[in-house]
Image (cartoon, rainbow, N blue to C red; front, side, top):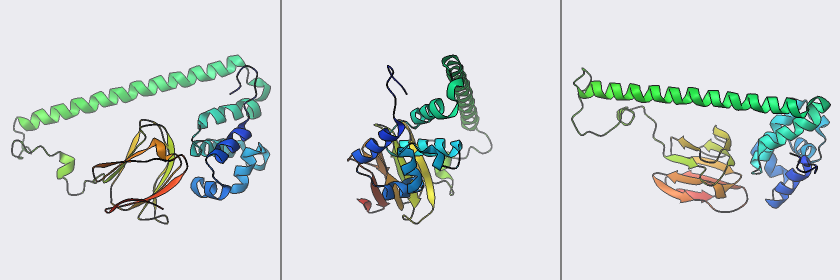
Length: 238
């Protein structure tokens, strides 16, 4: 956003981030699924070349996060300069942010309540089984969870953790032409588990990620996008 009267240049900021990571438009198009012409329009701030403001905001968020930037910052700046115009004044923006914070607080309260309900339910079921319920036939000290004992329960052979920061990633099963099982930005502190043993992935900021493959930690390095293949033999760069 603007600071101390300086104009936050959406296009130049995107272009500098792309040059800094040494990414050409072809690579960016393949990773984001956004046509090169639209990516150029974003960097040139020629937003009228895109189908609608909705497309502009979606593409801005995806492209910025792919480059390791704060996608919401770019969407907010576009809204303030190109969508709401003069009507988007300070009080209105303040009210919108306050409403957004309120919705976030309400969502957090609901999630906490659901979590407490789940914990209480698990405790009650465990106590009932320990007391000798009709389905409590497992020998004492088994230690295996219900999910682990279920024949159809998936095993998270691969887990991707964003320990040091956020990163855009696309994960395909079996290879680059295989089905996509995840595509988007993994926020800092989040993780995604995947069952199966053969994956191909495209990472925009590998330095922010850690892989857990078959129970072993794999720390990634580098400051530019990278493609990796995961098999039972290990992890290799493509």
